[in-house]
Amino acid sequence: KNQVEQSPQSLIILEGKNCTLQCNYTVSPFSNLRWYKQDTGRGPVSLTIMTFSENTKSNGRYTATLDADTKQSSLHITASQLSDSASYICVVSDRGSTLGRLYFGRGTQLTVWP
Amino acid sequence: GAGVSQSPSNKVTEKGKDVELRCDPISGHTALYWYRQSLGQGLEFLIYFQGNSAPDKSGLPSDRFSAERTGGSVSTLTIQRTQQEDSAVYLCASSLNGGENTEAFFGQGTRLTVV
Image 1 (spheres, each protein chain N blue to C red):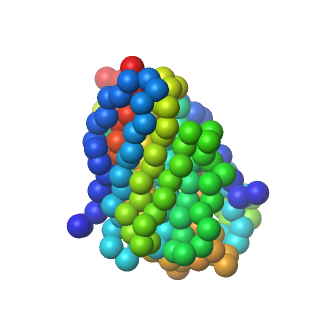
Image 2: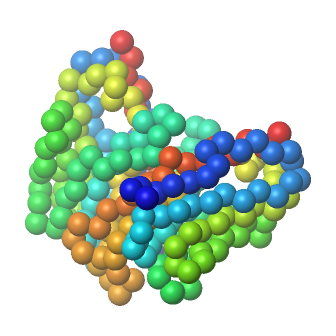
């Protein structure tokens, strides 16, 4: 069964600290993995995309990693800011006959305190 | 339109009433997903439409929930005899077929409150 699991479910950190969010998946065949950020009251927006051949990709203070062998991804946030408080959602796309179905994790709720 | 549009943005309804939530995906997107987020909970899959294929309804929590997608475009999620536990934000997303750059585009969601 194709699944995407995220951890932790929620996380509280102090402003300026770093944190790492985890995403494990069983989706096969794998096409790509995206991390989305969902601000309160808004729809999620894409932060970064990882394809099979990519191990690391950065977008400002956000760095995503992918280990396609162990089917794990992480999102590392450096020097956190109050505006990083949001839900972070991991979405994995398959490459099967269903033409790229997306599988969504439940998300990690990050709260950054001053 | 330029993005995924959901309506209404907010809905307050009395317990036992029926509600309809609408999602207008990006033009040309064949895949459409409905999810919901309850207070303090993460995303919960409801239903998936892909082109003319039979939808995956495995996430619908009860037979009070139904969804349809007319003409492969607009989708309506209907909740009959609403209960308080149905209160949540209902999110719709759409995407193009396949490819290594497949991306989901989300609407702003409909916040449903059952009183």
